[in-house]
Image (cartoon, rainbow, N blue to C red):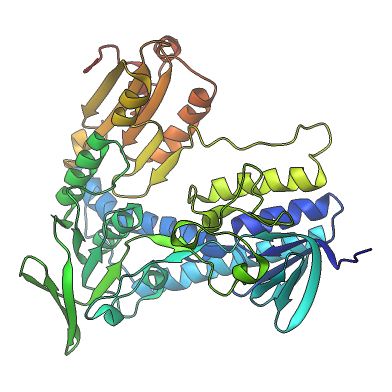
Length: 455
């Protein structure tokens, strides 16, 4: 008869790993968790949380400028970059402590170190072996930077929060949400920002009108967006970087950020030794219950390269916990649906989106109706800002169901979160139309759009 040190051993202390460990322990399981860095993973330490804090900071410059239209006079304060970094670090440290305490209170045995698989039931942490009935891999992802002449001079999003000194001239390479967010944030903080993307438009995979609209808004705020080009080489010269582009032009900057995608963090996990199958870019292959090719080993979150969002990792973790240790009292075992997952992009202005793009909806449902509103928000009738807001609904004609909802505007994520609940419940356009709007708000436009712009 096999003996085990743990019922579940979790590799990785990010959002998915911590949730699984804590919930399993609360159900009476013996749980171990190994993390080599600070608790909380990318989201807490190098992603969602610090990025959103810096996004808040970046908005103040435009708020101070806009306040003049409302009668506020005087000079705006200036950014103290070191104060922002210090305050952010203090808050992240506080959150790290909360994660540690949550695990401790639940009875999880935590280990500081990198866990490596030895076989289907054994992991090595710091030279010591631990046996577990089941193992969960939740090590997340990492930035991916291509190799080219001078690539040693660039940084990833991991290093952006503690740059010293503040980059007066910043080049952002990439067109995904991370690239667009950092371009917006540092532009707002005062950098002279150039963003390069080799494609025809940023934010591939988002609705085409949203892509075009946000690109225009970002340019209006001061981001120098250059499309259909890429970096050829980078050389250091004195205290700056000389960047040569494929089109033959040159850019002189202080810092180059490469935000060209993330890949699963799988190196050194011992996947081959344990027989765990991998797919594209090393992603761990799992079934609907997040079980790998080895029945006792599971994987959730970015390491599987499905949907790289913190709430998705949390939900996947709960599917595993319910499957292994049973659901909470009075509850059914959880499943995971990837339909109608809402998301936000913290560009300036923000993007909020849930459901299908217009192209996707047309391909999937055939006949659709598109409703759109593009307007200047009430605030900007006095602020002097030229910022505009875009709202868009996509409706399946056969059922009248709203299958896509998109917004570009202030606090778009906050607005779209509520509508995501309605769409998950199957709300139709008729229900939207019968809903009374809150006036005067931007969000009320979602329930007052009556005429389709395209069918």
